[in-house]
Length: 149
Figure 1 (spheres, rainbow, N blue to C red):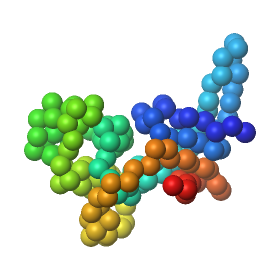
Figure 2 (spheres, helix red, strand yellow; figure 1 turned 90 degrees about the vertical axis):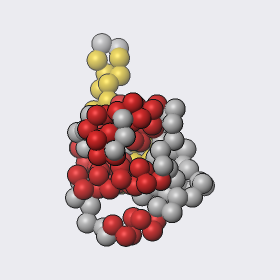
Figure 3 (spheres, rainbow, N blue to C red; figure 1 turned 135 degrees about the vertical axis):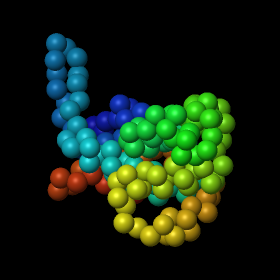
Figure 4 (tube, helix red, strand yellow; figure 1 turned 120 degrees about the vertical axis):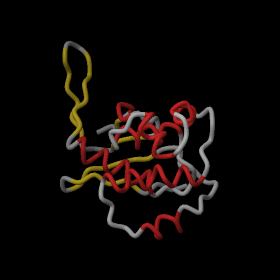
């Protein structure tokens, strides 16, 4: 089975190795994702663990998964909603402090049990970023696939 470029999540670098069905309807292909909620949580956890600043797409993904408007997130961050829009469009790079607050807000939404200090240590952000992230479904749970550099 071919892998599926899952752009519907709002991220341009997410690919699924399995966990989806291809449905043909009137000559068009449609994709049905198994446990989309679980997949989105796996994507969010993967984003939490990256060691570079969040991209604009990732900020938007975490904000939407947290069910926050740009105005809501701006209030949490102490910035204008226009600043949040600029972060999401990649026009302005957020500070490391803002980046960490966005991650911690999302982590609280999904009730990640890791110690906050583990995250803060790991988020001494480095310069390497991954171009693609692959996910596979195994035994009814989604997980990211380790990829070679």
